[in-house]
Length: 307
Image 1 (cartoon, rainbow, N blue to C red):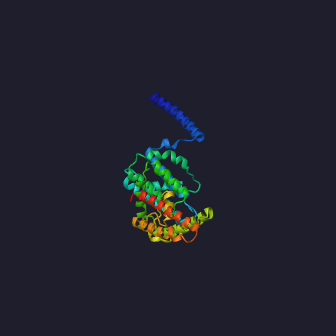
Image 2: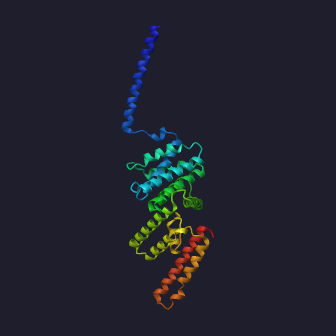
């Protein structure tokens, strides 16, 4: 019996020694060469963290993030809302409290996220259910619009994400935006009146910058008129070409079909070349150019809306 116990002790000691050596070698290897965490964790976990990183990247692109405490708090609330919606539509989605802890960790000031890495990894979400991907985009929009409007870098990030997860159809994306703006107006993503104030401030600043850079006073005036019409505004995220078309017609992107047609008629009456025939050749040419511009803008909007 004693011999058996001694043999057992011997082999236990040898096993413990070699296992200890293995742990030390592994520690040194990870210390110098790093550890591929994406391989260690389950694919599901990796995909969830990828969504968190996209949200954090959008938050960090928002002006005054980490500076304006109220804005930063509202962004976190919107992220929490987005995760709640994902939890409803995605089976086995983690508890919101646990994934919010990951968001809080990634959103710290010292943590950086490379958009290029996101772009390379987003393809793994293409096979997910449409409703899940829809909530990802709505979540991104809710973060971006906390400050009132999209800036160029946020616009690029949304395009990268929507294309990366496989939503490339403009009509589908337009419906997703409408769902978001309906929620925004209902107060789902914060105080809509406060949003309107931030939007007006943002648009006024954009108009000022546009005027300083390009001297396009007329475009700036159109932006100013748009920001004054708060009841009709919803801040649609659209292409730069369409945004310019709506600016030419002095309308917001969510204007109704009747409003667009009526505005086109009114502006064509205002800039009809016959009214400027007696004001000199330059005035006549400008009125003709303006009429053509209005018709082109209307035609672009008409084709995008399908009426």
